[in-house]
Image 1: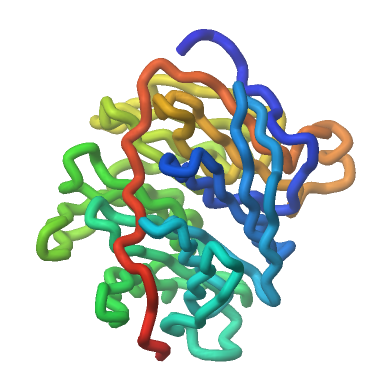
Image 2: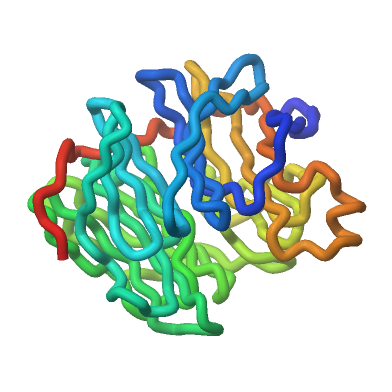
Length: 299
């Protein structure tokens, strides 16, 4: 690392900023403010991020993916929504039965462009949360059903290993992943996190895993063997996610939150809720666009 510290990149703060995604084709950054029901688009310029467009929803939203045509696939509270570039919206498959005290959380696209998203409980501790995949024909394939809080997702540079976070267990899992067939291998623990909770993740081109540590104000970089190789201190206790952006994928985007901070914590950490950026030495792994363009199945 260069020795520089991450710098605040947005003028405004967000309640629960999450799920940053870099749309390379349009040079825009996307992220969500979950508890304010808002999807945001930003312009990145020399480490600074300016909000250029907002999309309000009538429920919490957990994640977003970019389609090849520029449309956006959004994980609303209980179901998926396709947001057209013209502002049109189309409801897609339902993931969570209506009215259950749960919501969709972090999501991402695999190297073939299939969208995966997980769930969390809104009603206390749980060990029945799911991780699912949206198939091209609109079916939903369940990968996990025994999670405490499904969170960050990432794939290795060769596309054949998938990493996933179970936050309340403090675990990052890894499994074999066949991009061609969608077959998924046995889940196993890749690493356990102490001194905070693992949240969003991203992989770089050296197959090192960057993990946002909620509660610690820290981003950690883990080698393939699970050893910590770098730490970035963030002046915001609730660091929520990371992503690589810019033309060379060497600008690290860091989202943070004011949610669940005490008044004293907010006073002590006034930059909480902002997005941060820092230039890094190793570029990130490109994130695939969503392989769909429309959805015809609603469950």
